[in-house]
Length: 87
Image (tube, rainbow, N blue to C red; front, side, top):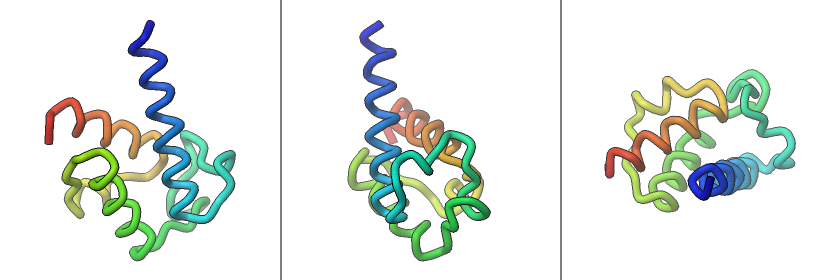
């Protein structure tokens, strides 16, 4: 149960980070909001997201990995996988 709480807290921290970078209300960064069509992520904001993910979570995200991201849920899964792999 503690792991579930930690995962929820991590997801909200990640959601707040992305909302801050995109200068959006946190409520707009829903699990299924499409990054390009709905959140208007462009190449510059994508770069800022990657840099901040790497700094905050101590991971390395390649351009190819981030190009495969379509939604917040995808980012959350990518961060979780990277942190689990110790990358």
